[in-house]
Length: 286
Ligand SMILES: Nc1ncnc2c1ncn2[C@@H]1O[C@H](COP(=O)(O)OP(=O)(O)OP(=O)(O)O)[C@@H](O)[C@H]1O
Ligand SMILES: [Mg+2]
Image 1 (cartoon, rainbow, N blue to C red):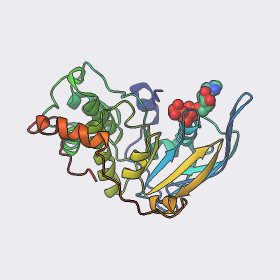
Image 2 (image 1 turned 135 degrees about the vertical axis):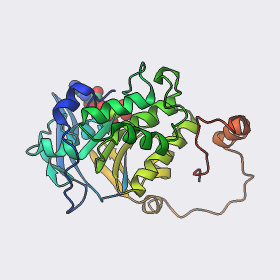
Image 3 (image 1 turned 180 degrees about the vertical axis):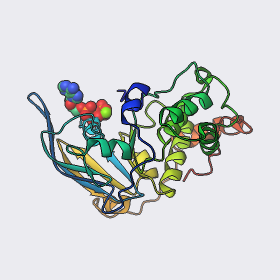
Image 4 (image 1 turned 30 degrees about the vertical axis):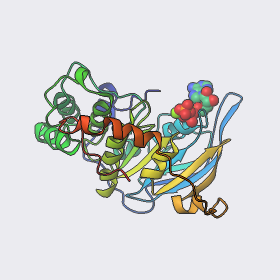
């Protein structure tokens, strides 16, 4: 689904730069969150916290309520019960402050196809009334390895490039908290790794990221903490190491190691991409 918080009409209302920085406590604090759509009880008492500067992955199968939770945290939807604070602000009573503290990137890139990547970035920077929109755009193009493609129309971009541009656009104004709803849905393995790298760099820079995903490997690669949303509640919440301890100790078995599909993919595609200016390196692959 597309979440349109960053579309210009809403931006005009919600964006007062720069971000309000409320520094105490966790970046996100959720207690007893409940939400039903008529008879359908989607969230039945969700609790979690996200530390500042960390990446938190909310995992869950289709319909688990991930997008619903993100919508509540980003003030697009009201909870039936419970409390949620983002950047120290209550989503119900301080919605405007929450909106100034966040950005939201939905599953489908919300970029303008007719404009170039650079023009998209400049447009958002202007809408946010920031000084030197051109310099902001150039800096983001560089950070997301889009400098060479910056003047090309977005219609010519690959899915991974669009996604990176989408995330770059959401960073204009330096929101301390970003929500990424299925940031790599529909992307090929290489483009996913590019997006992962971009998200990791953000967290290294102090941004807090909450991402939803159905891909276990995505959570494994990216997240400092992983929570699983199931039947309306968080049933597991911990680091990857903690989650792995929930399983019985590994048995030592001698098996011939088969390459994964990903290994095959990169071996075959591998060198073909070398020298391409549209792609970042895959050096981040674990
Ligand atoms: N506006 C709505 N009206 C009625 N039901 C809804 C509405 N939005 C979501 N739902 C239902 O609530 C449940 C949770 O939806 P949600 O989109 O939050 O799940 P999700 O975990 O994001 O799923 P996905 O992985 O498919 O994106 C689903 O059963 C969905 O059909
Ligand atoms: Mg969803």
